[in-house]
Image (cartoon, rainbow, N blue to C red; front, side, top):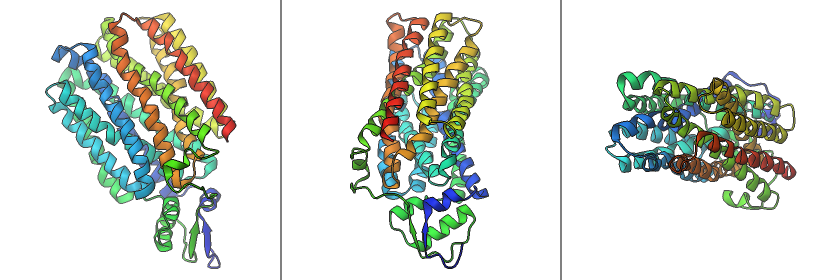
Length: 438
């Protein structure tokens, strides 16, 4: 940096540079956070059949437990976004990892569904705070031309974590019981915390938006980007000013209203499909005669398919219109759901069909996480992302809870999964409409 420079535009500075080693470390740290988040979000779907058998309770009764974490996720996401826009990404993010790690570790001590539901709700608060803050922090430190792919790549950690806990459940439950899976899910986030304390930076763009001392901004930005900023006397964000002073109010200002609404609808519909699938597919397979380990392994293929799909969707979003890419993925996911329902649960192709559904729908949903930060300015970015996640989480609550009700009402595998094509199509239409707001 030239000594003649007195004012630095942070946005232009990051966009003009290649990623430094420390920026790649940040990508990796966010990947690990999202991976342990994904493990703890998906974990109940894999241990539910064993808990149902041990406690002798019905599926609708256990739906309270299955729906508790998504409720916590919604509340945690909404609270964490505004908190992060006031107090900082780093502080809120580390608190969230501590919270969901401890609560998951305590869940095996629950003696009934009430206690377990309470612990899963508290776990959800931490889980809900983690995702919007990792998305926001990473998006504010990478060049915009690579944002969609890198955030999508980060979010493959969610799919990978969800898949790994399925494989872990398949191995641990027959030998050590379902409680061992929850112990693993709680221990890993806590082991990650010391690493985050040392290496996780605060967002320089947040620091500028909050008018922090230039010396503090220079120290953090220079370290992350591996650049000397000694000559810089002041920093600017490089964004147009917004009239609203409160982050939440920005979401409903002229120019952001329709954008906010379409993001909410898309995320809601996508999570409804994903959570009903991952929460209840293992139980449906077990009821059809599959072993628990086989059911867990097949369901884990949804997450593996989503991992590959997220990378492809993120890559395409950087080269084509991102709204059309995501809409196409949601629409193809609807087709895959109809084919899966038509072929039946015991079809020889069930593994590949589950993977195809995950590839399309989870891939599109992950792409949406990479797309949303660019829809809002820094002063409201975490709030915009977190409210999308929080309101969208109502879809995960519905999906997690309604599965048991539909099964108890006599709905079969074919009817449920064919019906799920409808919300997938609605997600595709909503994200296409979002294009008109940009």
